[in-house]
Image 1: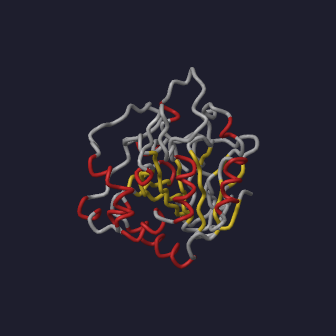
Image 2: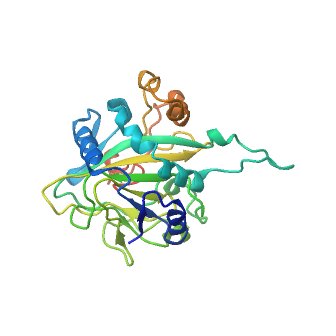
Length: 279
């Protein structure tokens, strides 16, 4: 199990490089996790999925307290490590401003109600939309921080991952079944799993009668725009209440065109296709 202390940045980076993902244990307190879990369950913008899975979108528009997840210093440092580029120019390459290299894509709830099925194995967008006749990039284009607001374990439907799959450079098979080498991203309420888009991962099945409540904070490099049809922007009225550092991470959302809808195959509903599949 790839767990490290929430303030162990060097240990987290080492684990990311070897395993491809990492869990930061108790990154926020259990009390904070419980408060935010309650807020997820009362948020108004919900997209029901199949077999008891539910997406809760635009959480920042509902409750600005979710910023404490999106702005967690260790999570931001790891996202910058994985996504940021050069900070000093060279004769043959300019440098993008360091303060603008990382952007926040979304802050959405991930609720697996009791009895929900396992998710499909996938890599986060845009890996599934790229030319599959070529090797996929070996660097992430998205980094997801999946916050565990209730306990994540094998019984509650914790996210599954394949350690080392960041080196495969191809999509996983389209299945919900267990794969060889899979592990569960277990953690207590308040922990967070850092999962780059290079990783094979999927939601586990919730075998209990209680919801498994998570929040996905999705980070992008400066050169990526709105990646999926279910990413919705923070409202300007809410954005204006943010501290400057949070405004810097989200100001690009104010210009998003949300009219675009991607093409989906018939066997999957729109609700199944958030960032690929359930987590």
